[in-house]
Image (cartoon, rainbow, N blue to C red):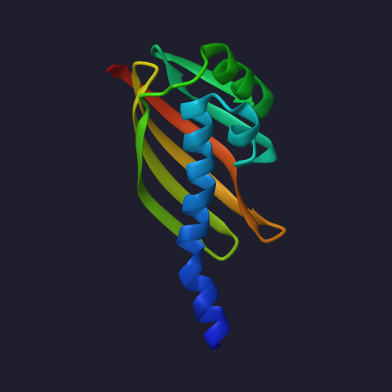
Length: 128
C-alpha cells in the first residue's frame, strides 16, 4: 500500500461521518435537501415504526420527514463505521427525533468519490 493509499484509507471513516452528519443536521433542522444529499439515488428505508413494518422509497421517507418538521432536540451519535473498499456499514443511535428514540443501520457506498447512504434499516424504540 502506498502512502497515498494509507492516507486515503485513514480518511474514509471521517468522510462517512460527514455524510451521516448531513443526515443528522437535515433531520434536526428539517432541511430535506440536506437530508436527501446524504442518500444515493434509489435508496430504500425500512424498519418498524409503532410496531409495524414499513418500507419507503427515498422520496417517501423524505416526505414523511418533511411532514413531521424539524427535530430541534435531536441528539445523535455514530456508534460504529465499518468500511471495506467502496462499501461500508454504519450504526447511529438517535434520541428525541420528535419524541422517539431510533437505532439506524446504514449500508453505504462510495460513488464518484463521495459516500452516500444506499439503504437504511431502523428500529423505532418506545417514545422517549
